[in-house]
Length: 548
Image 1 (cartoon, helix red, strand yellow):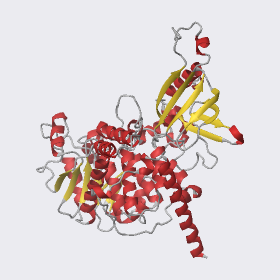
Image 2 (cartoon, helix red, strand yellow; image 1 turned 90 degrees about the vertical axis):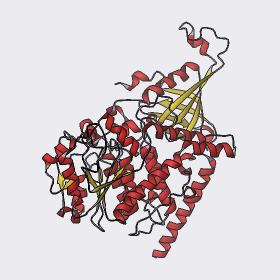
Image 3 (tube, helix red, strand yellow; image 1 turned 30 degrees about the vertical axis):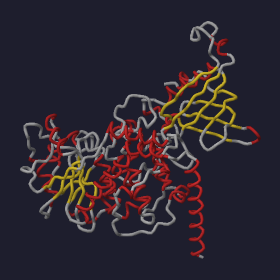
């Protein structure tokens, strides 16, 4: 596609930009295939706004000085009727920024609006900006990513006695959403894995995602089994889970659906691990919202944060009705249960819901942060996200297509990754010395997952990324974040490593609204950020003096 086809007006002079935390500015507005650029050079100053069009969630148009013009949309004399007219475009971004553009000339305003609407919703992955982004400090020849199943396996020497790296999915034929290599028990051959995959939704048979060095217990994840209404069995699936047990006498299955939802799934071919077929596995149900309910919760909490009535009762009511903090509480408590089963009770756990690509990844990630000190370092955390979300097949392209402002009908959008970042922020706030990265990293990731210069969050699976050449034609965000300049900015200067698990409090009084994200563009939060940055600089300088 030629981007120029969708740009009838490439630039407009004398545009007024009104955005949060800044006075209005007058300057030139330009639109390209991927960016909106505003340049303000009034009063000898220079202020620029460079916005990825992909970051735009919704636009609203309003017109002025058009009353009295009958037949406004007729072709004859259109430009004459628009002379002296002006329009305002309100742009609502996926990072929750809202700003206005006052554009002289109605025709120019409508052209800009149409271009934004078209170019902000490109469906073809290969036309998105990461395929055009070429920073001088990165090379396409560099290895893409921080981790791989092979690297992860090689780093865990203690694991290798009882587990192996299988390439059964090398051509993605067994499970389209899994990576080519997975870690499975030694005693289970590839033919058994193929048959077990047919008994799991989407082919997502149980695979290892975490090995606990302290006691040798593991976390596995999968999708739901498929016994259906006829209560079918799969000997290979049962053998696979029996092999996970090793010398242990019991394991847990944490199902992120309610017991009733799991029972109802049988009517459509799904189901759960029955007691008769999986006698050593105890099933625990912890219902977690996903899909439309979670997306609507995000929309409501953002709406509450934008309420300008200054009415306390209304604010508290809207925040409660959004249920966002309730979702945080459920995620953290379920992850705490998972970590407790492994760390304190000393048993292995299988996690799944229906598809195993959303809530299962959320709680397995949080549980690893709770238990594993390496996952709390900046590099370990980014490698964990790559392993548990990017490689494990979270459908980013579908889940993050829209944010909280879009007027489009909800399809498969769901802010699971944003919910994860909010949960990690709650951990960071409760344990300010235990995590090696700062809130700034979480905010950066919350922006990048919806609109990015990098290819890390493109597509819905590893297979799609390989097919479209994402790993050879785009750059990896995680590698860029670990460059020395970036690492220094995102590290936590108060970080003190601990080998102990960090058990979060999930009492309502312990959980707070993530102001840094939801109130990011308000003056109050900006003042807080400035104070935090000053404290950070003081801590860094103090550390340097102590080293002298």
